[in-house]
Every structure is written in structure tokens, then in C-alpha cells.
Amino acid sequence: MKNNIAIIGGGNLGQAIGSGLLSQGFSAKKLTITRHKTELLSKFKTLGVHVTSNNAEAVKEADVIIIAVKPYKIESVLKEIQPEVKKEHLLISVVSDYSIKEINAHLTSSPTVFRAMPNTASSVNESMTCIASNNAKTKDETVVKSIFDALGTTIRIDESLMDAATVLGACGVAYVLRFIRGMIQGGIEIGFDAKTATDIATQTVKGASELLLQQGNHPEAEIDKVTTPKGCTIAGLNEMEHGGFSSALIKGIKTSYDNISD
Ligand SMILES: NC(=O)C1=CN([C@@H]2O[C@H](COP(=O)(O)OP(=O)(O)OC[C@H]3O[C@@H](n4cnc5c(N)ncnc54)[C@H](O)[C@@H]3O)[C@@H](O)[C@H]2O)C=CC1
Ligand SMILES: O=C(O)[C@@H]1CCC=N1
Image (tube, rainbow, N blue to C red; front, top):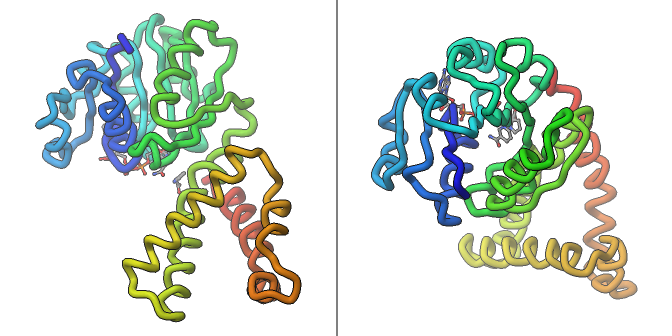
């Protein structure tokens, strides 16, 4: 990848993106990460990444800008970098609940603006990243897709689905991790130590995902292969459903969605 990338906001997601790019061989010299407390980015500095608290300087040196600050900070960041943003820049916002139109309203130079919704699995190159833009050129779309392809898998979506992508793909990591924690707790109760229960639960979740990813089957078709009539799987599954398992998940997803807007 030949672009110089500036990540504005080296927090949880900004660092995950930085780590994911570096582990895929992206040159540390072409990467800048900013935040106020630069000492918290020392592991990147050690690897040769340019670490600074000066956003304008970072933007000046970059051709791709990734904004990864909290939603309530994006307007001040846009005001700060606005004088240095050029038409040739590709500006990618991973900020939730802030539209391309709102971003453009703070910029006079009309850069090409994208929104992307990756997740924290970017750090291990297993993100699902949803990407949206308005009338971007194909060559610019290719550049943005290649950045996030390096961090996992990408799909292009309409910007109107960005809130839904935020919930399913980004918040989704937390839902799945809570599920895994529940499996571990159950595993300990039936006899495993925490480490063994974690090893079994995590690989089982990975394997179940791979069944769907590699074979494209419906989850219920795979569940049918596990549930022996009158067996222990269906007994446990039905007990979970009596406890509101699928319903709680669907309600939680809808509640997250309803809580995106401030
Ligand atoms: N954490 C996640 O799983 C995901 C987060 N997002 C979005 O990414 C954005 C960042 O989220 P997190 O990384 O979780 O937040 P965070 O709070 O961990 O990171 C934001 C970083 O920006 C820095 N920052 C604040 N003001 C700044 C400024 N003026 N200049 C430079 N840096 C500044 C903060 O010090 C912090 O390190 C949010 O808008 C969130 O909606 C999107 C998908 C997933
Ligand atoms: O919870 C949040 O607000 C952010 C958005 C997506 C993941 N975390």
C-alpha cells in the first residue's frame, strides 16, 4: 500500500486499526497516529510510527485520513484539520452517528469522504468493515477497500444502513464476547478450569462461525446436525429459549440501535 495514513484518535479503535495495518506489513514510516496523551502510543512509536498530538501536521503529511475520535469530538477535530484538508485527500470517518453530509459541512476543500464501520478485531485482521460513500470515484473506493481488506473482510453498504452496521458489526463484538463469557461460566460449573473452558468455548465459537462462513449454510441447518432427538443439545437449547435467549439478543440489538443517536 503506497498511501500515507494518518489516524486521528489513537484510542481503542484507532490503535486496533494501526496494529492491524502494521501486522499486514504496512510501513510504520507511512503511518501517523494522533492523540493528546502521546505517551499512551509508545508501543507504536517504538515500531517507528509517527506519533503526535498535532492533528494538522498529521493531515498535512497524509493522503488518507482516518478519523477515529468519539462522536462528540469530531466537530472540533474537523475544525482543527480543516485548513490542511485538500481536495486530493481521502477522508474516512469511523465515527458512529455522524454523516458524510455533516462532515462535508465542516470542510471547504471537498475531499472525498467515506464512512467505514470496522470493529476492534481489526487488530487481529478479522474485522468486518462496512464502507459507505457518496459518488466516490472507483479508484478511491479501491484504495479505501484495500485498507480495510487488510484488516479483515469488507462490504459496501448504503450510508442509510451505517447505524445498523454499527450495531451488528461493531457492537456485535461485545455481544459475542458476552456470549463466550457465559459459555465459560457454564463450562466451569460443569467441571472445567477457567483456562480449559476458555479454550473450548473460543474454538467452538470459531468453528461454528467457520461452518457458516465456509459452507454458507443456514445456522438452523447446522443446529439440526447437532441436535439428537431427545438428546442433551435440544434440551439445553430449548431451556435457553425458554429463558429468552434469541429474544434477548434481538431486543438488545434493537435497543443498541435506538441508542445510537444522541
Ligand atoms: N471501539 C469500538 O469498538 C468502535 C468504535 N467506533 C467509533 O470509533 C470512534 C472511536 O471509538 P473508540 O476508539 O472506542 O474511542 P476511544 O475514546 O478509545 O478513542 C478515541 C481517541 O481519540 C483521542 N482524541 C480525543 N480528542 C482528540 C483530538 N482532538 N485529537 C486527537 N485525538 C483525540 C482520545 O484521546 C482517544 O484516545 C467512536 O466514534 C466510535 O463510535 C466504531 C466502531 C467500533
Ligand atoms: O458503543 C459505542 O458507542 C461504539 C460504537 C460502536 C462500538 N462502540
